[in-house]
Image 1 (spheres, rainbow, N blue to C red):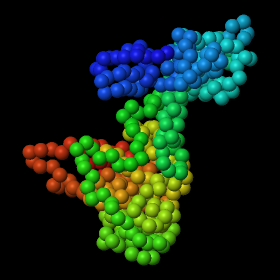
Image 2 (cartoon, rainbow, N blue to C red; image 1 turned 45 degrees about the vertical axis):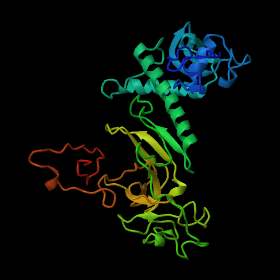
Image 3 (cartoon, helix red, strand yellow; image 1 turned 180 degrees about the vertical axis):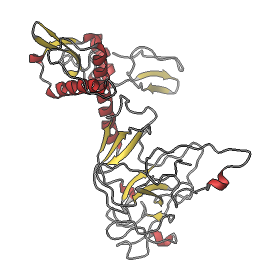
Image 4 (cartoon, one colour; image 1 turned 90 degrees about the horizontal axis):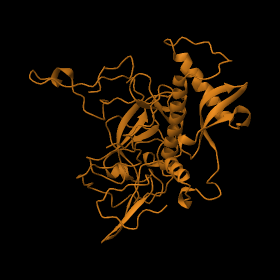
Length: 379
């Protein structure tokens, strides 16, 4: 399963999607990764009876079968059968298997749960009486079950990818109990600030504090003309609007320095979940968070429970602070994490009186947070 030995530069790569296509130019070898999933490539291999060590397909497991999910159900001559999608095999290889031969209790549980969920949604939420003696599923129900199974697999892969990339202690979970939407295609998980093209980061740190016991001696915040942001319990003690200067990579102090909070990442386990009011994906905590604790860092390109603070660690460029979110009150486990886009100390607030000129009307974005004190708009 090798790609052609040589391609012309700029030539469209066809053939095996997902295979690392390569070609040779005058400057050496070039590689083009494909976006197809590992399972898709494995399906192609098995369909063509090919082995590939890098994909985990060998002569030993080329013909192995593992249930990936259950697609359909029927009863023939008193025997219950399920249509099985085999992991690493194309859907054309799906086969009917007797219930007594299936050893996948969790997948059977998912199948019945998804079936009952769909039927209970019919007739505008009125529950449907399920008949235990049904001989086959309605094709519409079977299609829903398959979509739900594919979504479950996609969300599981997304969760695994997020946890591979994270650089903090807490776990990241993914949840969608609202619809059949899979992972967002425009979502990219990053661990550090990425300036837009053309932005040159200036005022990079070249020196650090000489403290052996921060903050007993003169430390980074004092050098910058500000106060230490945290108390001994690692809680925020400064007012909104003031910057946070943490110790950096040039400082003499070690990783246990009390002035190294944001740079260690969130200590909490969080869940990315699908909201039920059209707001897309949100984040909620899986643990109780006490007030004035660092929660997470916003590293993108309304009763709110998070406050925004600018943080400077290895960079002093005032245009490019790291954006950290701290809890404004105690947050219960399972509660969604929210912050005010116009909160004092983070962004300038423009009043309605001077926001709209007689000749130009401002385009406003409706907020759907649902809080009693919400202004109704993000801007």
